[in-house]
Length: 286
Ligand code: MEV
Image 1 (cartoon, helix red, strand yellow):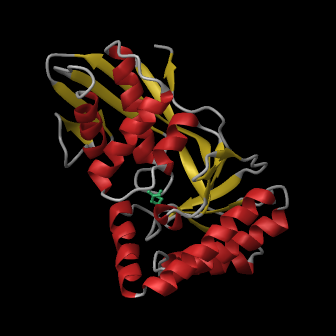
Image 2: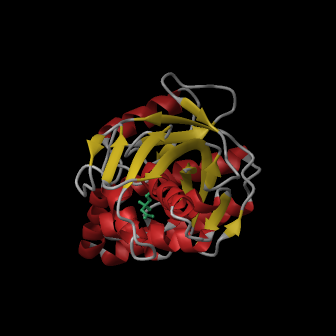
């Protein structure tokens, strides 16, 4: 069986959402496809290589199998992963691979899991690998669409986005970097999270207004820089965009990964254009 799940773009609120603040997130039209076939043993094939059950090379898929094994007895499976979502870039490739794997496993092994069950298992897998996580990535990979968290309110996002990938980063590392800063300066960091919270809320109420949303993108980026998840390379790129009249921010954990802005017909060199996606995880035709 083949299943696919979309990546995501965090428009506002990354990191702050880990501490209960609002975030605004949309699924994007880049998907991860996972093919699962019953077998005598485990074999996982992806861009990262060919392995058995391997918690180093394929941690997300391996933990997904381990968690799925709690609801169904899985002796072995041949698993092939193809993804349009760049790995470790902040576009939700990890959550998409977890969710698509769970859906393909449930279809192949005849276990009826609804979306909420898939999301709940995927959230556990994300925590197995990363430690602390808000759960927004697996939620979006499961349900698709654009949402305000934590209340799960649908938001209409009438834009497409340009995205520049500055290379791989580790979400777990960035999340613990923010946790350390918060331990050293709890009151300051809480206030920054509060400001990010208000940005996400304001954006959710004014999504149609490009100028207003761009102001919020610039504000959110400054606050991400304040909590230490930007890099000199990201700062330079954003400054270059600003000189050309474009506004951009990190999406996801930062420390590298992707920077995005609203696409209004000007496509920066080396960028890709992504559209919002309404459909979440699905079983594909063979
Ligand atoms: C990662 O895509 C987003 C973070 O806010 C972590 C999380 O929400 O789990 C950095």
